Length: 221
Figure 1 (cartoon, rainbow, N blue to C red):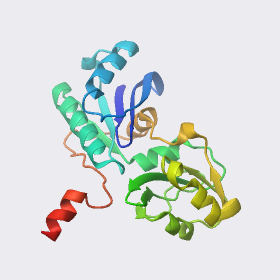
Figure 2: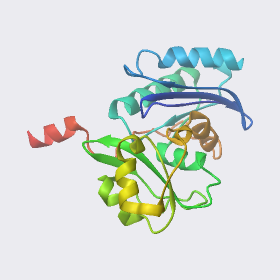
Figure 3: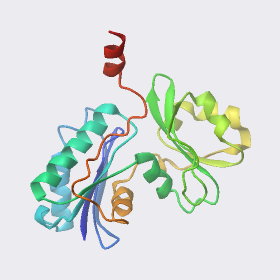
Figure 4: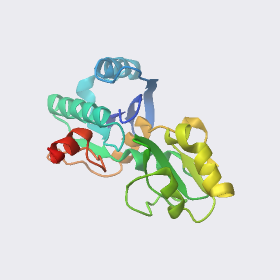
């Protein structure tokens, strides 16, 4: 079953084509000016690289956040449009869940941390076998230590900003993962989406965790 997967919740554009648990093609690009102008071009190129016509895609998988509000919307809107055009099911996967899965086998608890701006992070704690141990969180870096009770593998672009602070707060319990694990991987999202049947009628919605600036401004008004 060919699967097209994508994630645009960070400044990395990740797209992959999978079939029968094999990665046919995958690309991860750093995007400096937004995803909207290049995502469809990347998808077209990747399908060509994989030798998989768009009409052969049986499932589309998309990372639904948390992360960049604009990036999440672009990814999900693109995935929905393609699913409609190709008449195939669509399935969403939490980007934090995918990051934790990519780190397995870890041998210790895992905490993906994504930059949420405003001095905050999106994160969640996972067991050494990948089961989520708490709610999806939007917290300050200082609050993270309340969820850590021993050596923990940390990954995510939040480490670019807060690695020193976490190391100071957590000491030997802070174990940073290689940068290759800091971003959601479309291939992992596609594999997770393919593990259970997708219902074409299910609406995939963004996982924001906190309200957008526009929503907060509207509430104040």
